[in-house]
Amino acid sequence: MHQEKFVIPSRRGLRHNGTESKADSTTKKKVILVETILIVEDQEDVNLMLAEALANAGYKVKSCYTGLDGIKEIQLHPYDLILLDIMLPYKSGDEILKETRAMGETPVIIISAKDMVGTKIDMLKLGADDYITKPFDLGEVVARVESNLRRAHRQNQQSKVYRYKNLSLDDNTKHVTVDTAELDLTATEFMILELLVKNNGKVFTKANLYESIWNEEYLGDDNAVKTHISNLRTKLKKASPNEEYIETVWGLGYRLYKE
Image (spheres, rainbow, N blue to C red):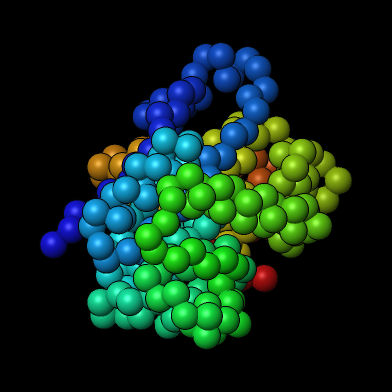
């Protein structure tokens, strides 16, 4: 059995007790989100090679080795891009691609030993954004990842403002307003709210939130998540006393209230 783990660069400025560092409390910190890539590839040596190359390029990487683990991961966590093999145990790559496309527009790059033109066309018609044939050059893979992410970012610029009830979140300026009042959020509070708003209706466990925001493995200490959620709720309640935004799903986690 393969052990799945995150390969992640370090992040400074966030303490584990749920507070910002002193520097962050006195200055407005620029929010920098590390792009996250999921690799679904059953060959361990290929998977590890891709993970190392992408981590060295500055990405946060998650590896899965079966199709079943891959689709579960896609359903539970948001990813900026997916590298997907076709021939996978328990669930094929084309099945995963179909289900991924039903959930959203996350860029998907197929990596496969199948080099027939017909297979490439079929996968592109199913919704793949790119197709790389094995054996491949790691430099080319990283370049293709960068290219697809740039394209996705340009498309996202067209709808950069996310709206929920009377709340607006601008992904470019990092401003959040409720009606006409701008909220004064910390970087961490903004990232939590951004994750919830961009994935409206999806339940995030405390582990999901912690690993997405802090970029570290969740070890069961939920104080940081609970503190920031509480602070965020307080600021939202102050801005709009009669409105509810963040719902606690008991035994599971948090999500936005259904509109």
